[in-house]
Every structure is written in C-alpha cells, then in structure tokens.
Image (cartoon, rainbow, N blue to C red; front, side, top):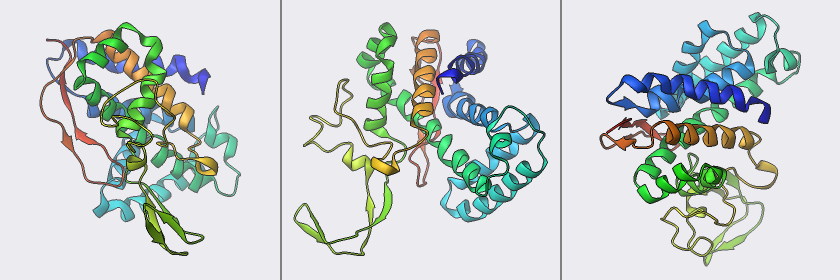
Length: 269
C-alpha cells in the first residue's frame, strides 16, 4: 500500500489542477469520488473505457431502491472484466484463477472506494466547520495520520453499523439481548460513546482508537489504503487551497453508507 503513495499523490494533484480556475466546485464530484475510484481501478487493472460504467453501477449500489439491481449488474460487469481483460500488473491478473475472484472484486469495489469517498467528503466538511483544527493541520501536516483517524471516529462512513447475531444471552445497558437475536452494532454510536471519548461531538486529536474499521477478525483489510488516501487527500487540499471555504450547505444522501451527495466549496476567497 505504501508503494502506491506517489501515484495517489499525482492523482490528487491532477484532480485539483482543475480547481485553480474555478470559483466554486463540488468536492464529491470533482475530487472525493474520482480519487479513490481511480486508485481502485488502477489496482484492479480496469481499462479507462470501462470506468464510467463502474462509477454508475457503484453509485446505484448506494441507493436503497436500486441496490439489488445494481449488485447484479456489478457482478455481471465484473465477471465480463475478468473474462476479457488483457493480462497486466494488477490484482485481477494475479487472482484471475482463484475460485472467488468475482465476489472478491465486487467487495473491493463496493467497500474499497465508496467508503473512502465519504471519508474525504465528510472529513473535509468537518474541518471546514472547525477552522481552528483546519489551521492546525494546514500548519502541521505531520499530524494528518492522527487527524484521519479522528475524522473517521467523528463521522465515519459506516456509522449505521453491522448486522450480527447474538451467540448467547448478553446484557448491554441493562437490556438483555436473547441468544439468536438479530442485532445491528452501530459503529457511529460506539465512536461517540462519552464513556470512552470525552466531549465526543468535538474534533480532538490524541483520542483512544476508534472502531470505524471494525474490530478483531472483521477488521477492514483495506484500512491502510483508506488511511493513505485520506492523508494524501487532506494534505493536498490544505496545502493547495488553505483558504478553502464552504459555498453552500451540503446535501446528504440516504443509504447504508453515510455520506454526501453534493458538497460545494470555494477554493479561493
């Protein structure tokens, strides 16, 4: 993952070149979305001409009304890609003959880029609403790895949580959850638990570890890549546009991944 850092930096800078001549831009459409989708496509070896289709399918996956249809479409699209793409220095070429290659790639696409889109979008929004923290990070980019973790705790993309089944009776908060019950573990609530994070609704560096990436055997295998992309995204944004300001109230979308549909900013005053 660390070997990808220079390439991710180039992608981020190329995307932000277009902001230099704009009075107002949509962060999601012009930066937060294309950065991770470009990275994941290059990792997988997705040809340039197929990336627009992937973006459309991925976006449809995040809308509850179209999730099932889009999942089937993405699976078909992925199978076709595996069957037809030319060999190269990429993940698909390396794993082409593995029995679960299609489901693995679908997982990489859905979990490996959409969540990072919202880390960048929601994280930048949080910084714009906390000018003091924004200034600290602009002046001290060495703190960005720590800041990325705090932004994930503060407003992570998978805050609605995970579906689980209780394997035994368990008491939480004075309530007994019977064995075999279906439950949802809210990562967002855990990350703002005041008994673990004092003043949880404020951005603050130096906190205890969060659970935005899950825990234990279910810990996100893409966590390192997400952190690197977040670090590079915020460093590049704050370095090139230190006076970046919110242009309008953002538009949140409905879906199982918390995030922004639209987020307009002014790169320069």
